[in-house]
Image (cartoon, rainbow, N blue to C red; front, side):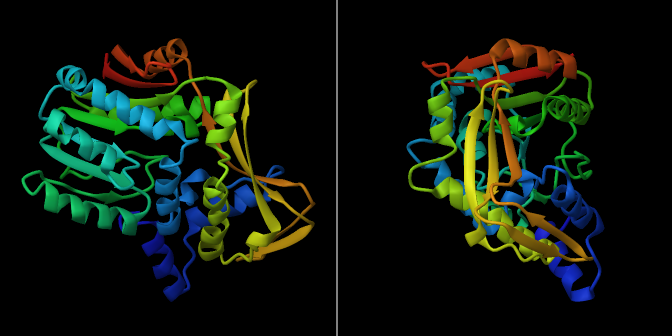
Length: 326
């Protein structure tokens, strides 16, 4: 999706051509026994801005906790990673997390990747003014299933940067496969590595509040996915029919987010798609798996990484991890 999900969708609507993979994925998710929408569809321009607002909420500890780890251990992280990396920022968003590391890491190239093309372009435009000497190449793509990068991305000493515990949005086997794709993307023996933010298992009350804040920003973020699906799939979801439901599932060690029908409601979408939802029936929109340091280390080992270094906050709520390929 070289021009980004939104641009491709607008083009298809002008030409009357369906965006087959995207529409097929959404149709399959909405038609499944337990309806689901991939969390990657959260991030249209409004969704990206709502997520920025979530990161500023008092209940949402991951962003500030991770930032504090980077700030406290920047020198040690830079010494471990090494200078002159090709910094590949997965799910870059507003690029702020990577930019905060520029002075310590001194990358030779910055490659932010995000599914929201318009939001990414605006962020990189501002970043180029602040760091004019740093070569940057933004890439609008869905990297959840492929990490094929253009030849203009430096091949030597790549560092895949995936903060915010975004890896937790994948199911365990999917997370393993994603790490293996990063391992394959390093290409050149043992050069380069990964720098990951990892949310750790903790008290249920802390996790529940982080994903269901009192102000309702997370609820707005979750419900906005339906507006995005309306545009992408020509659907007729009505936000008034749906409420946010987010909670920590301790048995599966994950936070779950759902949209729950407030009443019985019918929904239609393009190509004859339709479904009737019962009152209380849910659409599963996100999982956010939480890890233990030992469990995450084993996951990295299975994916082909070793030489793992971990940094923690004082409460051990969050972890930043660097690993090199073996």
